Image 1 (cartoon, rainbow over the protein chains, first blue to last red):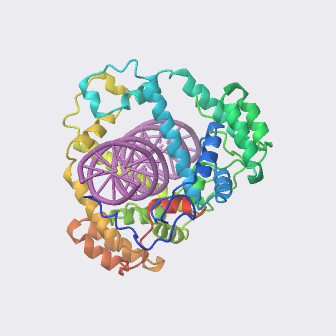
Image 2: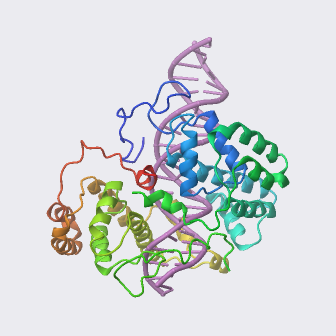
Image 3: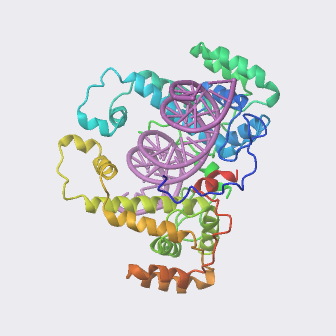
Length: 194
Length: 194
DNA sequence: GCAAATTAATGATTTATTCAAG
DNA sequence: CTTGAATAAATCATTAATTTGC
């Protein structure tokens, strides 16, 4: 019993969504291929968090090789994956001082948030994040032909997080974008085109 | 002291943003004309809250007559205006039981939030919202030539919220979109185009 | 084995919060 | 101090895993 009036939303109209993956050409939402998920995960492991417009464009382009995909799917995937990784990590890194009052049952991890905001957070989270942010400035997407090599390299690198920077320059084609535009901003991606 | 690495973001590169309005053709953000704000406000008063892709497109188109504007500006305007109206209303409707401890200084209006979530909200908000949702299905944008008339009608209607539906059919060209696409969803707007 | 029923994941939206320009 | 812009959190909704009874 949905209390919304939205769930009508074009059922039956939609053509089959993904040529591969799974069974019966349902309509609803994007159903990523395992390859697609793998690649996205690799990029995430490599430190990509909030891809720019161009990056999303390229990723989507590359991944479309493995199945139907839209840019927004890529965007959402990173949004969700980032958030849920954060959430997961927060959960495990705060079980220690998780003795609060009853009132906190109402807001499951809000307090962790406030905590995170108003005091130095459990280091490794932001250490990692900062690294990401920096590196992302020069991170470029891979050509499809190099996919396998990329996967191998990144996977290898993920076992040793101090060779991560190496992994970038090895796996992805890195070239200086400092003088380039770099005016992306995730919102451009969401709206500028319309 | 911003702890982000984002604020670099193309300063100086940007060409002048808005030809009119204000002073010196700065780059930064959109600076709406008074006419633009007026029109947007009218639409808001008329009940528009989360315009669809097409609606945003049209609004942007119309408003571009008064000055430089992008679709995303329209999108953001509604986002912000909706949120801040809600916030404003929440503030005034919960001042009564606003006696909390010192710790709350850290999170200014968080508690109001939780409140809103865990108990029936001040009715009229959601009453209004529901009305909006329904009406919006048939709300169409105005032609620019009718702007003045629209403004007049909407303003008039805003004094008597029970003639609101009348105002729609009077001020805007209403035609049945039930059989039409109606697959918009705000996210299409943000990403589908890219 | 195999569907119906439940639950867990996760794609998609909305809402809240924060940043920062003017 | 207002508000445009952007991010993060919370929420909704659908699909896949899985459990369960047969």
